[in-house]
View 1 (cartoon, rainbow, N blue to C red):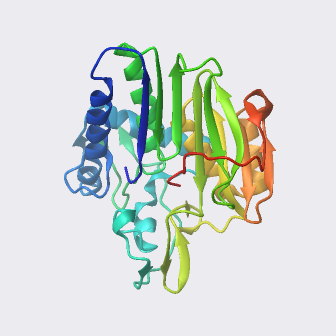
View 2: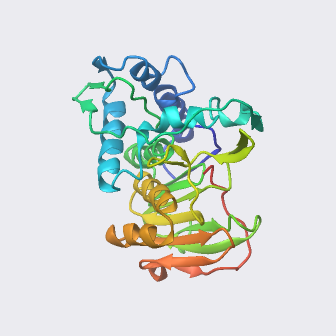
View 3: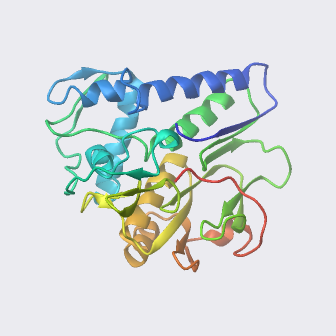
Amino acid sequence: MGSTAHVIAVAGPPGLLRHARLRLAEWEGRWSRFRPDSEISHLNTSAGRWVRLTPVTVAILRRAVEAWELTGGLYDPTVLPALENAGYTHSFETLPATVDSRAPTTATPGCAGIDLARRRARLPLGVRIDLGGIGKGYAADLLAEELLTRGAAGACVNLGGDVRVAGTPPSSGGWVVAVSDETRPGRDLASVSLTSGAVATSTSLRRRWHHGGTKRHHLIDPRTGASATSAVAAVTVVAAHAHWAEILAKAALIADLEHGSAILETHGVAAILTMQDGTAHRVGPLERFAQWTPRSGGTSPAPAG
């Protein structure tokens, strides 16, 4: 999934971490747009026709469409052509620092014409899907629950900065997640303590490259089809599920400070929005989770973006 996975299983039978590796590899194989044999790649090359999929892939597609509706289109899985037009055509670790091709930008098509059934899906002609904005969080949610079902007393799954915790933590202080300051590498904004839930960060300061003489990044504004120009550099969201935290973080960053804060408040989550100048703004009941607050120093898991 283009990032580092860190999985903790508290107690439980042998083999839990092996199960975690296999599951993450399975979901990567189903959802990656960079794998021509993945279910998502097959769906993208079969627009206009029904495609049979596994239930877990239909489930993540259904949640992606719901997220598009709930965010007013600011989260949009149909950004794949826009990502490619911006130069993001290969897995990021193999992407050149400068991409020379030029392509016009246009608003993304949105999810209105996507059809989903129990074991199949159909995309409208001209629509192609990228699950990069939801895949890591959804996988973290699924895996944390599976580890508990298979006998772990507690579980922590961190996929590129999308963190889901559940069950008994390894210490009495709860599950503690540090929030990195994306504008000041090596420093943290806050540390949050959870008994169960998720933390996800979205930032435009990672996964960057030059395209057509301009700096680009992977967060596409669906309204323009170009890399978002928001004054917000990063958004961290604390929510019940990692995929929902990831969705809201991306939507709030693209929306900019005022509209993004309103979206987060509407959905009742806690969040930190960090501006390009390093100023941090809090939204929602962050005090319920915060152990220490901005400019505290320390280390934290780096998000993939």
